[in-house]
Amino acid sequence: MLISTFISCRIVRATVPATRNCLLSCRLDPDAHPIKTDNVVDLVISGLVSAIKFPHLQLGKRFGVAIGFIGLGIIPRSMLRKYFDAIVSPQKRKRGMEQIRVQRA
Image (cartoon, rainbow, N blue to C red; front, side, top):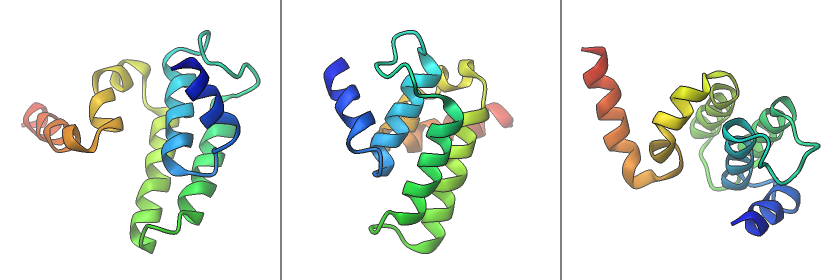
């Protein structure tokens, strides 16, 4: 896992999923993050650029993903840990959103 995270963080940062994974790694466990020179602000900026350039998304979704990177950079770690599965797994995302709606009610 450590090697794949290192490779994705350094080489493939231009893609949305790789940048998201690097940002999550840096936010959730900065001491274990494989690239010590990474910081949250640079990763959020890389995420914004990758979201805008990502060719497989329509314009509206690109902006939504960009806003998501800003959110990942500023929300508390406790929320990141709580909703980690919903953030990284599309199959669990719907279930995570339902949990958020139930908590608000």
